[in-house]
Image (cartoon, rainbow, N blue to C red; front, top):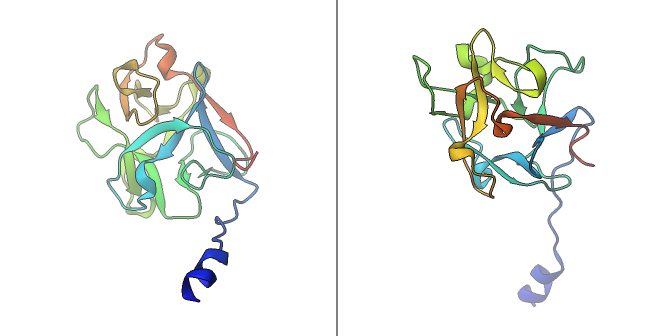
Length: 157
């Protein structure tokens, strides 16, 4: 009886707001993704196949769509950022507490790149490898295609 009841229960994914976006590689069909769906500070970010309505890939930023901005994971209080200080090539991109006043959670977007505000460090795939599970890091601004990103809005399309 219990097994039959459990078999009929379906879990709905959380609804995504209209201002949630997906951030997808301009040269590859992968989106910035919260690794294993763990909503904890320090969790590394990766790229993964883009999924419609995935809360692991839904990012929130100001309704104006202008930079500088923070990329907040859905409706959580966690932002995309870099904990390492001082900054250096290869520093991992992780979830960070948005309210903690960290310097490395504000981004700008020059020419299709997403760079930490006031620096030449830009979001890039680790080892320039475009595969599910590849972690994100920051690297000095370059011509690498793995530094090019597109914002897709809304995230549920």
